[in-house]
Length: 322
Image (cartoon, rainbow, N blue to C red; front, top):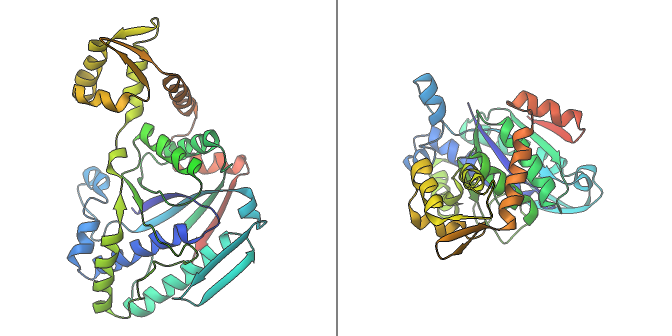
């Protein structure tokens, strides 16, 4: 079982090709016995191992990429710009955002096979149409997607698309606690399709150097790996018939239901107002709980149901590589 990657996507296709290129190179190195690369994937596939009692020999391979992007980019009505020094690609103009992504991964897979005899598993890429200016639309579609992936290993890329898209992904992931990784790889050459300042490795020795460079650049946001939604919903219930509650009641929810200490109260100031020994809720608590309840009403429990629902909504495009 491979990893499902989720990402926003704006005008720069490199937002999705750069991190996945890095992951593919690390996976190649893992298959060749590189210890650093193996450690990178050490927790990947844990859920499957617990269910089946066995572990993949080389876990962490990308299986599916789900991107959230605009109708204008999918229709090719917006100018995009991209380049690849590795595969001699260069373009500026209007074309569908799907085209350079497909072409780049085809070239990447061919290179990995010819250089390292690494046969990449077929990659399925889904493009979900979203209003990139609307947090609510991003949150709703991200939440729907998370529900469809509840039995999958999910990593979230945090560098693609608008701020509204990325915040929507974070909020939906925080509530569902589905993603196991939130990652980002920044680079200044935003038009570039491969990682900048990294030479395309020509052999195993070159790959070892690239592994170190990628791991040095790789960043994660582990603080979001928390099912905050369930906690806030439990706290919200305290206010069902009252305007304010005692702070001891909130602490009791933290300690007895979620094994958190009172220091966690500081992280809840966006949602709660603390006045001596009393606590009132902020409008944000009502807003988020309402949105989370909307996600709970969505009748999607697996990936097949997710795909059918988005196809019925006519907001899903799919490409296969190779």
